[in-house]
Length: 205
Image (cartoon, rainbow, N blue to C red; front, side):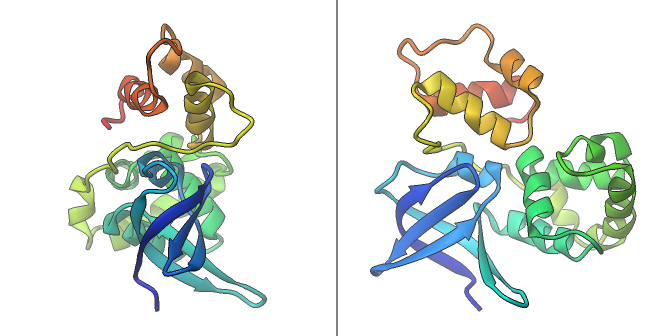
């Protein structure tokens, strides 16, 4: 079992990262939160990992913190929830926010995740509440430090990069525009814009 990887970040999008570890490129699915914490391309990064073996494929997933990996494990243990939906939850909310939503039985908050309907939200809250009661340390799990997310090459400016990153995390276009309102590309880096936007959205970065 591969528990973590440390290497040079050679490729990154809001949902995938590739680390070069001693000449071997490991491709991992990642959440928007982890994407936002990545360093610039060419720099060293460490990701905590989880391998999932399916009928016809082996997939590797990377996480900025051990707590995010633990929450991923709890999410995919819920019936009907696969890795893609688990990453959508972790792209919308930090680990501590997911914990709070589940323990408060906040179905509206869980339903706000892209791809999560009312019935899935009910199942997530019902099945997670028992398991998370034994993981109280997740309530205070630190959010990943915002670094620099190398976004899709179609983006042409730091503001567009930050907008693409927020949308990839599951924020609505309206939330994204509100979070970036008043900012421009004059002297601001994408990581600064993203950090400021997340603070406006109530997610301390």
